[in-house]
Image (cartoon, rainbow, N blue to C red):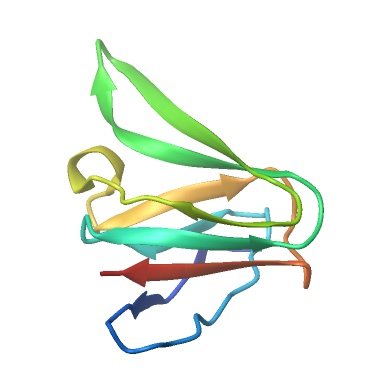
Length: 111
């Protein structure tokens, strides 16, 4: 399966329900990032690990950031500084350690 691109939603002062998207492990997923973007992870099942690609290198070494999305929780991650996380097209790349099915969802939101 190819890389999935998630749609960014805009939060405002008006009440709104986020639209969650399911993602799969094959190819990972990406989302557009303006530095004010975060992801909302709705996890109704077991723990999942998201590995974020950090685009800066130090001493010719690349890095990643791994975050555990705890079982039966809604978790917020971000914001993501553009100079550390964005690729040349303005996207953040994430690899989950397992497929997300109907028990999981991700909403990409910017303020």
